[in-house]
Length: 214
Image 1 (spheres, rainbow, N blue to C red):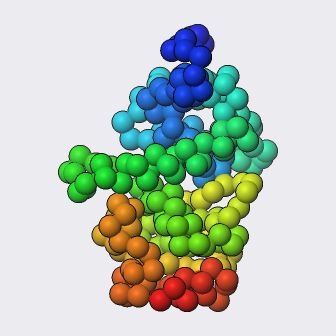
Image 2 (cartoon, rainbow, N blue to C red):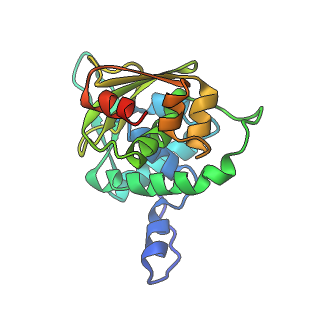
């Protein structure tokens, strides 16, 4: 393992960038916010990263206390990576970075890869912006696929790929254009619901709160 490069500046921002400033590190954190992931799953959902770079970043994250690796018991019997508590503390950093990057998102380019669960953090941010702080499970259905959000959860995965495990407190059905507009900050979630661009079903507290906004 190569020694970590440093800016050698006595500044908390510089120290933070010493740890997470390398290319791909924060995007690996984004993926691990969904819970334990196998190396092959991480590689599949980080198009463009080489196997060598991914392996190197994961080793760096283990060394720096951001992630751990463990072996799943049978029948899984696979190595998975997951965030430590320190790594999970990067969620608000990614949320703030995503909010700042809304202005840079622009239109989808022909070369842009898309994964349904990449909309998870922007939608979670939109829910929190509307005061949806109660803990609950939200399933989101897009053309690209399904994912679910664990709103208000302090431990465990922030989101997950695929349908919700069990009956969700709320289910949102919307198209990619609407989800993109919400992610870019061009459309507020209550306005999208009121205009019929987002269908909300479910009888949980979160579903009722979202419908009440309209």
